[in-house]
Image (tube, rainbow, N blue to C red; front, side, top):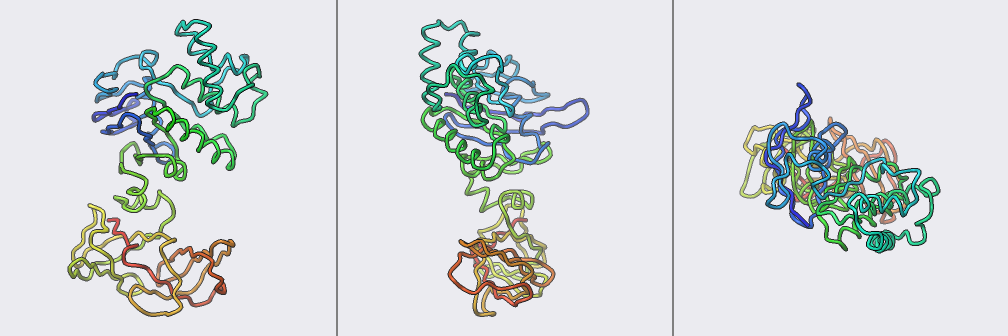
Length: 358
């Protein structure tokens, strides 16, 4: 397995910016995800690692070897494409064996390695089937086996689950992570799906408009977003504009649109947040941290009018109008009577759940 380093990599297509100054180091054996909306540059970055695009500036290294201008077939990477790119005229066995045949591996070794890989991806007995006889999930596993059978240093996956239905996506997600852990292979995964990124990754790189916004563990990205974009893109959150009115030791006091003062912890802040009296700041408050409060008063307890109530069985989701802002909350169902539209509700926002996003 190998580490991957991108040193200030840029990519331009004519005058159009593809990727701007990507500077990352991916550890050997790490599951690293590029996450962001369509057109943010994540697939362009992956294709530069694969060798399909060459950077306009910067360097790419695998371990200590510079590969910036090395052609794809000499990089020893395995890639799974969004549409799988399987050969429809070949059987499952032939598809998986294709990379070994190109590398002139003997027939006996090819047979042994393909059969071992089919067992690993749970396709035993499917060797003679045509691709059109397989389900979407089975085709995805064939593509994964074909990428892995050549024993690459690095596995690259470009939105591999986007063509699967919700249930199959979840099952296949676990399969990919199981294989990655079992093989210990360095894996770079591209997706726009936050749930995929959060559940599978060791670390995540969030991108927007060709630029890196934040790199961190799923916990860091979710709980400590560096800016408003990351906070809103990763999961569901409430973003409130507020004004800092004072700081006392570790405690930051901010005034929200309703005129009420909320209190948070100074350390729960993005580096971009300006925590000084009179400064404007954005609060990020996750819905699951907001607690329904029978008392309509107290520190960090706000009152409002229910705009929407959604009972899902396991939990109750509310959208509540608080001053000029709406507050989304998600509470575990404890058997309380569900509030209805127009009802007044008290909601407690714990200090530690307020993050100053900048």
